[in-house]
Amino acid sequence: MELFASQLLNGLALGSLCGLFGIGFGLVFATLGILNAAQGCYASWAAIIGLAAAEKMGAPFPLIMLAGMGGAAAVAVAVDQLGFQPLRTRGADMLGALITSIAFWMILDSLAGFATGQQSLSFPSTSYPGQMLLTEPVPLPAMQLITIAVLVAVAVGMHLLMTRSSVGSAIRAVGWNPVAAALGGVNSRSIILLTAALSGAISGLAGTLGGVLTSNVSFTLGQGLLLKGFAAVVVGGYSDVRGTAIAGVILGILEVFVGQYISTALRDAFTYSLLLVFLLVKPQGLFGKGSLVRA
Image (cartoon, helix red, strand yellow):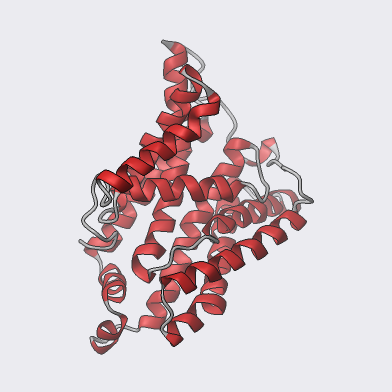
């Protein structure tokens, strides 16, 4: 029973990372119509920047998180303006944006590999809460609980932002029709920049937390989050960020339990089989109604 409870907590923490990244990935996909293959690199670079803040500046844990989020947001805005904005100006389709994002993925991935020396680095043990809140009957690592709490806070906050605020209304309007939104008084360019920054920051938060939890700060960090985050968006649906969060948690628990009780070699097979089932049987996802940003 203790093993089951411990693995459940591991699954919740892993799923929280997947759900958190999925919220950031799904936001830019639904509002800007971009299937951004470079999104995982934002997470990798957030962890790298957070690690630099910890090692070079001795920053405390909250500032490490903020540094990672800020760095990822800056990278996301730069990619959007350098790569995607010219495509929007020319009226390019989603395929053009996907190809562009793959190019940025390769560039940012190579730069991340250079920055880390092609190695898997880790945060200093003194830079984050590494203690156990309880040891009996089930160990409760502080970082796992923090990760779960962050997912809940971001999911609730994003849901309220998208459905209860004027900013959320503007984002939804730009997502539906940028021209009509501009005619209605919305500054589409500013909203696009805000969306890119917000999406990058959330993905960066997932990357920095993931770097701490897995002791893996490398160019490979974002690749895993990209695939699992995409799966969370598809399984959860596009109509509600809460669906993405819940789907991410489900996928995380499934992966951990399959690895523990069946075979570690089959973890990804189960995850992506579930993804395939939803694409074929229920493409709108568990909670989807067509778009992540609809109220």
